[in-house]
Image (tube, rainbow, N blue to C red; front, side):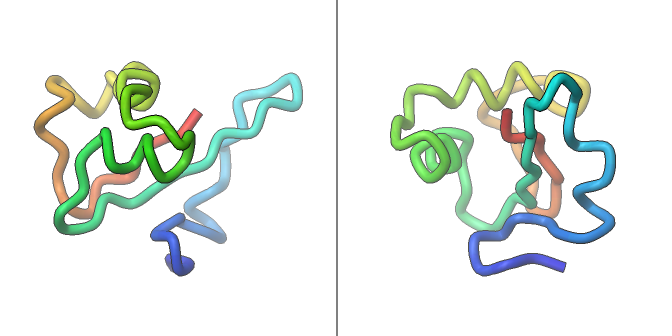
Length: 75
């Protein structure tokens, strides 16, 4: 289930927290999203898109190629 910001809740959040008290959120890509847009939403700085890309290298091969429905970790 998604909240108003497109953040996955419930079972989608299980295991998202890495450890040592650091909380990682998840975000489900919506139509029209870019990593820059998501970075702006979460960090207030679109230039931090590489932080999201680097946290999701297991799912993404190119920061410009994200797909609707992908669940991304927001560090």
